[in-house]
Image (tube, rainbow, N blue to C red; front, top):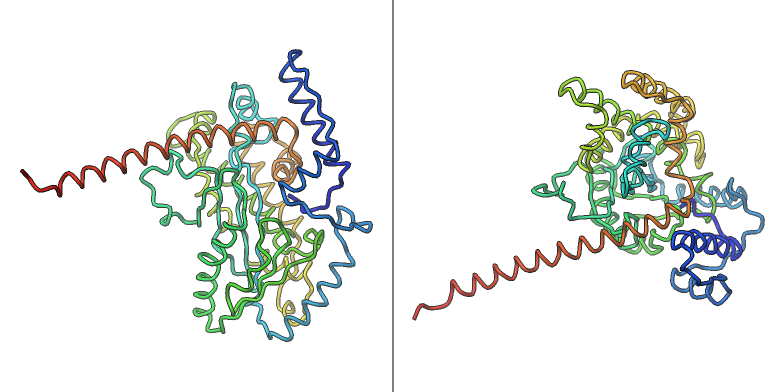
Amino acid sequence: QKRLPVSLFLIQNKARSIFSTLKERAGEECTETFTASRGWFIRFQQRFHFQKTQTSGETATGDEEAAKRFLNELDGIITEGNYFPAQIFSMEETGLYWKRMPERTYIHKEAQAIPGCKSFKDRVTVLLGGNVAGFKLKPFVIYKSDHCCMFKNVSKTALPIHYRPDPKAWITPILFDDWFMNCFIPQVKEYCWQKGIPFRILLLLSKAPGHPPDLESLHPHIKVAYMPQNTSVLLQPMSQGAISAFKAYYLHEVFIKALAKMEDESITLSEFWKSYNILDCIENIVTAWQGVSMKCMQGIWKKYFKCSDALTDNLEEFDPHRNLDEINKKILTLTKSLDLEVEGEDVKSLIAYTEGELSNEDLIELKEELEEQKVVEEEVEKEEKKEERKEEVKKVVEVQPKA
């Protein structure tokens, strides 16, 4: 998720750890053994297309030397292309656990106590982006199902976001191509026309498995610059305050909606949370993204991405930590109105939770959930095909000449 290199040792240790957890679940009847041998690792590497790389002392804080080299190269690209601030875009995806409350709240504890309840681990992937001028792209949301009952009689094209299904709710190269061709290009083309500027775009992306390396070949007027491996934490503008602000605003919107429902309809917080669905989530994603200010969207470039002084001279200074603290204070005020025992650290932990490493239990349950979802979707697809077949037979019968 953080696009950091991992070693053979780390992968083998994690595999053995997951196997131990599964063996404990199975009980004493399980006599299987697993050593995560080198042969297993080679098969694992081939299956998931992992590539070998030299780390040369890189750390979780990012490769500063590679970042400096990239910024120098980017200066040349911007100068040669004569790009305006409004023509330079960046995009990043993030995971959002859309139905998760702060851990110490009774709502979260109730969800954990319900057998088989996994809603608090349900995740969507959201693609967020914008340009140096502060313009924000329409969110691109990926959820695990296209057959959710909440979407019945709902036109996906009428949603205020771009919506796509994926069994794992992850961004894939195919979905990224879809976003690039059918969402990004039409929107920025319209934006350039409205601003009266040439449709020539520089798009900055992190190197990631879900980001195709050949995007540039898909459109002659779009230049794509990929940040070097292990530099996103230093270079990716969206990761310098915009995404964290978005997640904080999302939680803020959830509490606002809860308070409104409880006042207007006299329902409990637990009842509100049980009824909270993916369509409510999408509505709050839109509102949360609207809450991220232009000052934030511009400031993330000035403070962390000093590719060219001429591009950022007119932008205000922006402190992402102060911005996040201000949103968190509003959230804490709402939690008090809801009689929730929540502290500042609880809110920060929830916002940061989406960036954390999944535990063995999380990984196992995620796999089980995806398998269950696949079975449901296959059943729905079978029923749809039966209905389509019935309609086809009906049409054939109707056109048959009467005897």
